[in-house]
Amino acid sequence: MVPVYQESAGIPALERALRAFEADESRVRRLQVVLVDDGSTDGSGELLRQSFGGWPNATVVAHAHNLGLGAALETGAAVADGDYVAWFDSDLTYPPELLGRLAAELDLGADVALASCYHPDGGVDGVPAWRLALSRAASAVYSRLTGGVLHTYTSMVRAYRRETLDACSSTREGFLAVTEVLLRALRAGKRCVEVPAVLARRRAGQSKMRIVGVALGHLGLVASLKLGKLNPPRPRV
Figure 1 (tube, rainbow, N blue to C red):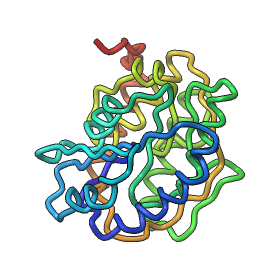
Figure 2: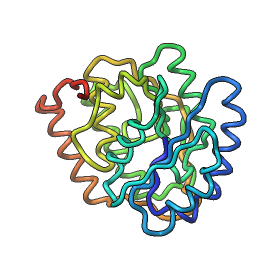
Figure 3: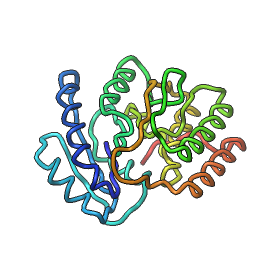
C-alpha cells in the first residue's frame, strides 16, 4: 500500500513505476495496490483516481483531513486483503521492484522484510544530508538498544505477514509509527530481515518530515525502549 500526501507532481511517475512493477510481479503472485490519499489539498486525490481508477486490482481511499503517516498506513492495511502487506513510499526513493524482493523474503519464512540503505551492501544516492543525519543517528541508537539485530530502523518500505502487522500496531502517530511497529515486532520475537537497497533522492515534490518534531519523537521512543515501557504488542480488536 502507498500513502500519499501532497504528491501531485510525482503521481505520473508513480503510476508508470507501479505499472512496470505490476507487469513483472503479477507473474509471481496476486497483487493488490492500495493508495491512501491522506487529506491532500493539491489535487493528489483526483490524480490518484484518474491514474489508478481503471486498474482492476487497485483501490484508492481518502482521508477527509490529513491524519499523518501512521493513520494512512493503518487505513491501507485495513483495506488490503492479502496475507502479506507491503508499505511503499510514493516519492520513489526506492524502486518498486524492491517490493518483490521483500515479498520473496516472506516466502522464505521471514515475518518482516525491510529495505535497508544502511546495510553494508546498501547505500544512498543524492539524499539531503539533514535527512541522513537524523535517520542514521536514530537507526544507530535503536541498533544498540536491540542488540545490533538490524542496520536500518526508519525505512518505511517493508513487507509484513498480515498476522505480524496486525499484532504490532503502533501507539504513535506520523513517522514514529514506522519505527515503533518494527520495534514491537522485534520485541515479540518476530523474524525481521533486511534487504540491502539504495535510497535515492526523491524525484518530485518535497519531504513532509518535520525534522525537529520527528527527532523529539525518536527521543521519546528511545526512552520508552530503554525504560522497558514498549510493552509487547497486543492483537488488534
